[in-house]
Amino acid sequence: MLRIRTLSLGAMALALSAAPVLAADLTYEPAPAPLAPAAQAFSWTGPYVGALVGYGWSSSDANSRYAFGSVNGDGFKGGLYAGYNFDLGNQWVIGAEIDANLDDVSGSNAIGGVRQKWDGTARARVGYAFDRYLAYGTGGAALSGAKASVDGAGSDDKTHMGWTVGAGVEAQVWNNVTARVEYQYASYGKEHYDIGAPGGTDIDFNTNTIRAGVGVKF
Image (cartoon, rainbow, N blue to C red):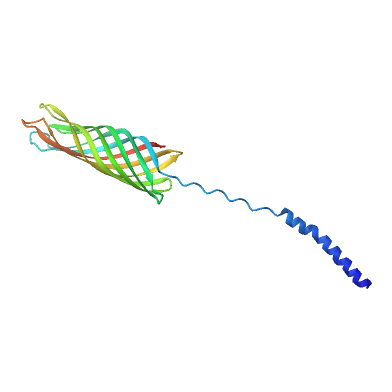
């Protein structure tokens, strides 16, 4: 009987000595760190405005042998653009954009030449987004003002209407500021200029333009 009592007291003492250790384990076990909130995906939806600068190359043709024939030109461009994007939520982005530019793209030979003075476009845009990066194609209507001259036979100004297509890449660079690089080809229809021989001449021209822009998205 004494032996059983001794064993019982020993078991109780062992249990009491282990209790603080168990309590410490239960009390001081660190809680798991909370999960960080997921970063919100960038949306391209909304209006925007911006400014751009570029360099263009032109090719002009006059259909009268009394005019300058064909000449190539080049020069700088600069202007403003504005538009609206719709982010479809599946990486595809669609939108519309307009721009207006002042140009100094000119070419001439010994007989005369053509200078592109301004241009503007109204275009659709379709792009594929990689979060804050957008690769896009664009196309639509184009207008341009040009001045043609023949040495010793005067000059004339006309407005041409044509079409344009292009492609570019755009990225969010800081908060709501975006930057882009873009290529555009524009083909302008023929217009009749009162220069050269009696009856004048028809002139058409096209341009290739590389331009860069910085915009603000609202």
